[in-house]
Image (cartoon, rainbow, N blue to C red):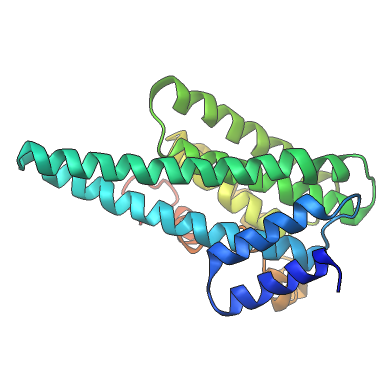
Length: 249
């Protein structure tokens, strides 16, 4: 077993043990040491599952501590300072992890897929561009002012490129294309505060895919870049329509 295969195996057993930090470490080594070889479908999902779980836990922690910080406004200065410092610590960890993913994508993964013309390479290209949009979006959630706007544009650009590529060669029922539409609609709703565009995008993706959904195998829905929270918001967008009274989880 070579080093790459060994780390892939390490990632698989780390996933079973739900030790996602170990899974991240293993898959990071895989990407850095794989040379000219491209990640296959299973390996892409391992990479995505690893970072999604680690980053997802930090996003959840950030939301909780941000809420605690707001409630501590009436507390003494010492408690307020502690809550603020703890939030900033989580933000630093979250930024670091997101930037790590983005570097792997830009340095190792996207360059290989952008040169190819096969269907598999197009699928991988959309997958990685979608990941870029996602991880820039996670950074936007914690930024403020000019930096928030700057990173928001990077997220939007990545989603838009992924959307254009998806329309070139992925069917409307393809799980990656559906997941992209889901997350891009959440971006418009939560980051851009554009409920009309979010609803339009979600409804369009739903309408295009609904006629073909019966032909999609259940197993193919392991598009691990889509989180439960984003999926919930997506269906709320579809159900609420105008989303005027939408309460985001």
